[in-house]
Image (cartoon, rainbow, N blue to C red; front, side, top):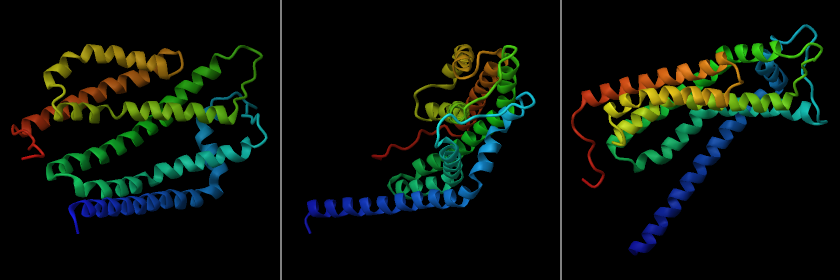
Length: 251
């Protein structure tokens, strides 16, 4: 067997493995989705509870499209199924990528994957339990007299997904800070010097991704700043724990 044919055979082997892992990941998400499907309406009600609990007596949500009452709960079930199956999906990704990594890359990558996943979940939980009550309380309290609040269920879902993404990504700040330090892009001193700019940027992001009230903006800006400080603290301890640079892949 020539070197070229051996390379082609290896490439085909990787493609077969990738296909197998993708199929397992999709089947994992689909399996969870099928289990959740009978409870799709209940899941949507649970998702809408922060708004429903803030509506005046007799307030309710509406569906403006014919198929919306059927498809929107299914979308919610699909979203929750993906989130529940995400560890299994990441396990499949790790199983495919890990054999090609060096030992020091494995030691750094696996904790970052696990930590980033947990932090994203924490960001979504913080948005649901801490932010949504303030946001929807503000929105419903500022409605003009005589205006009845009837939010479309699909538009509500889009708003909730955007908020989940905003807070989930915001909670990834410690991971981003540690990566910047480990890759040598920034130093601990530079990160500390940039603290005041990060605080200003956090409030700007809070103004962009949350409703226009000071409480909602602060609920995103303060955690973002605190997570930045946590990232600096973790990166500092990692730097002080080892003074030896990471081995070069070619060495």
